[in-house]
Length: 160
Image (cartoon, rainbow, N blue to C red; front, side, top):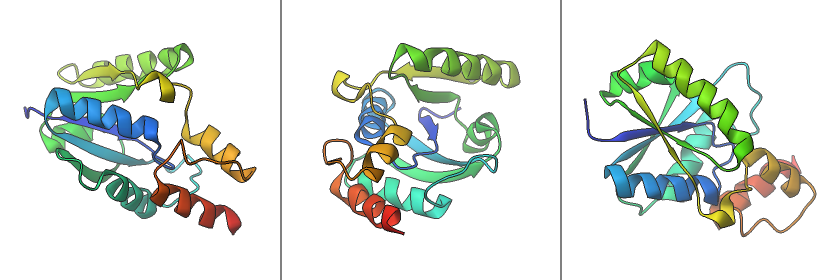
């Protein structure tokens, strides 16, 4: 198995919290594949291609990060990419139960694949994409939550 990690998520859109976890993961693993998920049962604000493009734009210049998309089980994606480490961000204790359940399910599906939890800086620990979208809809200042390139795309999308 490879010596890199996969950081899966929907990134709808990517936030400074996500970027913080990505950079922390690169510091530990050297290389991180950000795996942008496409779940047909979920309703996204941005298309899969748009979300991939936004993560690429937001991580431009960050060494050790590559971006791909995937569908289906993240454990299958990890096997195809030949790695055995998944990174998940934990913001608040409210995330823990869901993330723990997912990690145990993934372990049952693929016991050779480990999940590593990383916490973002405390300044981003409250931030989620859904909260960001809600605040942006109300035309609040979101510049401390996302890079300018993401803010621009989000504002354009919400005008439609």
